Amino acid sequence: MNQIKTPLIVANWKMNGNQLLCRQFSETLECPANGEVWIAPPSLYLETLAVDKKLRNFVRVGVQNVYGKSSGAYTGEVAATMVRESGGTFAIVGHSERRTQFNESDSFIAQKFYASIEADLIPILCVGESLEEREAGLTYAVVEQQLTEVIDTSGIKYFHKSVVAYEPVWAIGTGKAASPVNAEEVHVHIRQVIAKYDDQFIPILYGGSVNENNVGELWEQHNIDGFLIGGASLNPHTLNSIIGEITR
Ligand code: PGA
Image: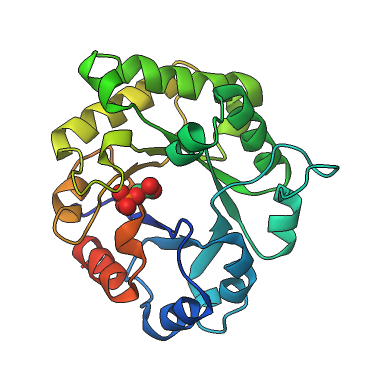
């Protein structure tokens, strides 16, 4: 186990959960011995978790997506300022499900990233390659493109207020996590890309089929600073176990 790092664990509920799950989290989730726990429920449940008497003491709450404009005629969208006002402190941007199912481009994601920073939310920028891209040897090029589009739009000074999540698309929801060595290689590359601008530290999370069985060996990797967890984050007992594995 790593003695020095303290983990950042982000739960991405995706379009799952309800008020009952919010209550179960309040009753069951334990304050970690060290590190931080952030939860991104569907945005309608943001405030329920943000004002919860127990959770508000040790959990940050945020959203899975925001729009890139501050207000206006954008039916169905939510602005970063609204998230902030409702008690949210972070926003996931560029999740691969948004990129593929909702055709979000790198430049569109860069706007969301910038809007989050402007509203004082911490953006968690997701990057990662598809299986075809990995097999074609394009992993590094893909994550570099995804990162630089955002850094060039926001400026490196703003980028330092963010978190990056490496989420290989082929590992998300498949039960097939990246091997610790593969994940570490890409995390190192991500650090090198950011270091071309300057060398301030940014947390880099790994995401994709993380569970209580594989989290320990992933956590042993030097450049993995925490985890973005989907399916396994929906059960508060499982989340306690995952956190316990890396904070004991
Ligand atoms: P997963 O999802 O843990 O269910 O693979 C991770 C994510 O999409 O953030």
